[in-house]
Length: 456
Image 1: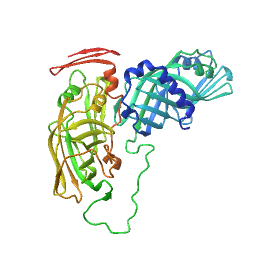
Image 2: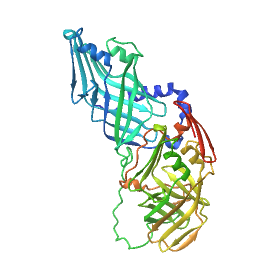
Image 3: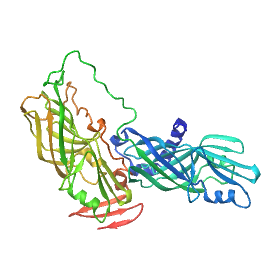
Image 4: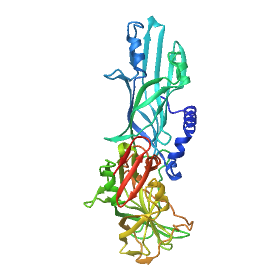
């Protein structure tokens, strides 16, 4: 089994550019496009190549046979499964690159027909609705290595029992695939649909090296600042939790009769009795001189509806100081502003109780235009323990330790191993790009341009 190749990725980029009209509608915010890739640790690819070809090979004319080789298996319906899958997933676009071992050997006509398709690789991207199948093909003794064999159309992914699945995506033969197929079919011929199921390890982003603390020659004090920086004394956030429901009407909409969806909470986050969510295991820093708090919380929440057209993942949640208040972040995106004029440190802890929250500028893109900037959200509550910090009251600023200014960085609690939910389709950007949305008096009318019209 081979790793995805540069040639294959370059060719797929050309496919995505060719779908520019779709990409223009469904373009994601820059913050989302730059999120890390995560390793695929399990999964499978199910594909039958082409049913009529299989029937021809084993029929009375060719009088041949079909053999699954090198770990591939034959399904009850005659299609094939290639597993286990490895690769990467680029969230939240649900862009996946997969590679699977095994192959299928078709023989017939007393050896005149001899076709081996093996080492199946796929590249798929929900943002552009495009996908590609690559394979090593040996036809009549001629070898076609890493050939761009077929293209497929990407629809909605679903998330069940830890696996994200694209089911029965339509497939067509490419020009290169037609040549490798020994001219049996022309480019554009419909092949069997493909199903891809992947399980992603959300705790280990690719390309991020773990940091190791340098050993200290002195015994640490039982209490005190974590470090001295030019911009101020930085204290560690050593624990705490947050409670937030995002927006009650949005939760009701997701699980109601229009979206007909579900909300899934990933541990260690939990759902509170009132329907809001509890995010534990706070970590981060507090800079006393600049009154800058940077606290992250573990767990994730996935909002899913409209059979995958609506699919939003709230993960890597953090609360940070910004000039004049606080803000809620999901990953690198500032999604909500929190009305807090003063931070009070008492007994080594900061508590914010039921603070008003509104959609931030970055939250407009995060919610796919579902809400405008300034729209009221559910209030935010949190408590964090700050090791060794003196009692004080200060006005939050966007200047972290070190005097560098800006919003600072977040040490994610999920980096310690807490699970996050994979994005199982696309963010709300894709849903809204395909829908005209009217929200009035709590009722919603949505026209899904791609599939159907729904009216409340």
